[in-house]
Image (tube, rainbow, N blue to C red; front, side):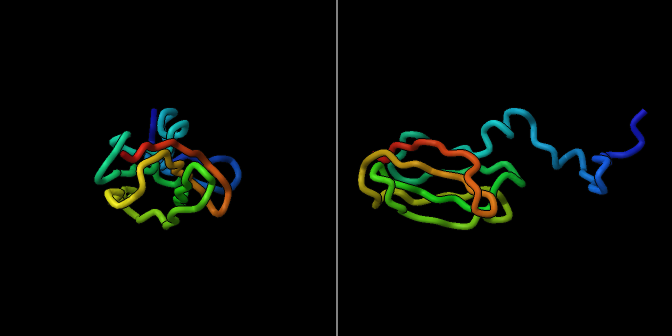
Length: 105
């Protein structure tokens, strides 16, 4: 019988069950769509998996960096970006989490 929606992790930390990501959210915490894109790109970030997004071009140069908003959703206007392949990287407290490739055309 379930009497609470919190878990005791046996280390003094209590976690609400709703804060635990699903396997799919854990394995793919950064969703970017549409891909390829020409105007706007929408980003969805699994809550608690990162706090910063960095975007790099194919030469590894940083294009843009921004903090993830509390909504964990963001829309970027890429209509003025040069056509090409970009790497959207998710970081948490400076540590790399996951990247995804996006084509801007």
